[in-house]
Amino acid sequence: MTLRLTNIYGERSQMRHSRFGVANWFVRQAIDDATIHVFGDGSLLRDFVYVADAVEAMVRCAATDDAYGQVFNVGNSRASSFRELAETVVRVAGTGRWDFAPFSAERAAQEPGDFVSDIRKIKRVVGWEPSTSLADGVDSTVRYYRLHRGRYW
Image (cartoon, rainbow, N blue to C red; front, side):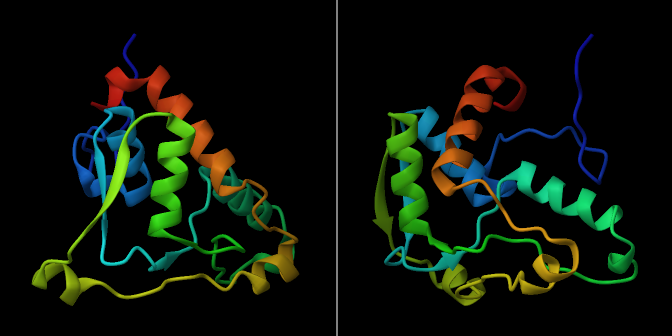
């Protein structure tokens, strides 16, 4: 039996290109012992959240009556820069490298700047906050993709 993962468009889910999120793409580059390109000065912030933490947030919302009809942000309580993500991926994977790359005019025009979710509401209403550190999440992700590499690229 072959496991076929599909996205919301019914397409087979694979990480054959960079459209599946920056964290997964950085992991792929490191596993392939390639160079991760960090655009600009690497200081842009995102709140990377590990998938198990995101699932836990959804489960807690589903199980909490006070969450019914509410809208919550799910993110990390600690933002990380793209440079920190690249450094962590390379260190944890033990392969790959990273360097800075200039923004193209098109990419610079599309870049929204820092993005960090305010998770105070979900923490207050359902008692959820992420529990997986960036390094631990990257470690689990690297191990998963190394084990299941054939399914993704």
